[in-house]
Image (cartoon, rainbow, N blue to C red; front, side, top):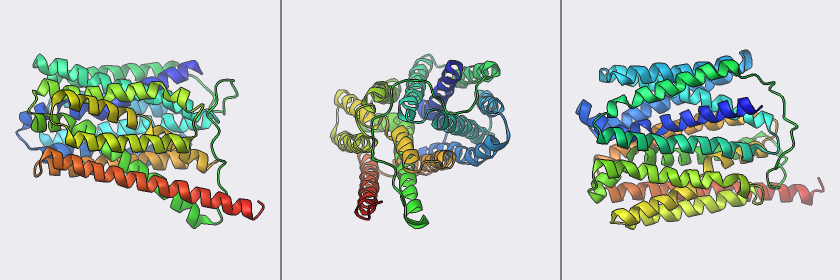
Length: 397
């Protein structure tokens, strides 16, 4: 079990690295190819399209093949993609490699999350929070490494580091063995949450599921936009150097990592609903504050607060959705991962287009509006589930 968990943490660490890779080197990459932020958004779109393609492929493979083959293949897809990117090929070939990279990232996240949901009943939030810590650590370290490489005019060697780590993971999975049965090991449990609702019919059931998917769609889109364009927003809005602008993403992910380190403790005491409500509201407040800041120091502090607020929205939403629909773990997890890919595809492309045509402050207001919609969708879910439970209680069921 411990080998499986540590190898899974490694995979999520790799996922974190790949999620911010293009954003960390975006200004240098666009300068090398002599292109605009719109094409930068297109790169993020292509990676997300690969991510979307990878979800049904992985879900299908999980029904037919051993987990070791699936996870090894996911790591090797990243190796192939990053090795090709290392040589900075023609733009059309770069786009193809970006798609392959997205497929690999999608496969590793879909498979690992699905297996964890099945293995650790009643402790899903605790173990998903640990996976998210690993993801956050990867997303934090990549911009730091990119900043160092940029400062040394060696940014083009960033893919080599990712490829070597992915290859190491592909080898590690050859020595991991586990039976994919629900774990009965003792350990801390998630806090008690409202019982799973009993839906009267398919329409209310799948309407609630779609709202969960829309939340993931918007959240991942916002996070992906921040990962990809926060350094560029800092450069244009605050006139900061590329080095300090790139560090803005590091500040964001330091906060994300700090928040995720304490999630395991929080979810033992706070229900999924209350945690999500608080996180979404805090994130909304700090995005608003970011639109008002004009100095580098206060902007860093605001980005840190934003990272704390957003640190576990994805993982706890996934767990809450699985809790709401018991027995549908693979379906729910795969659907959430797919909508995460769609959000990660569409939002950065839109934000990249906006970056070429609007002021950075206006772009931040666009992100704020989407965050407000996120809050509205969550409140609809929360109120709807309360109504469903109250109706069942009133009928004596």
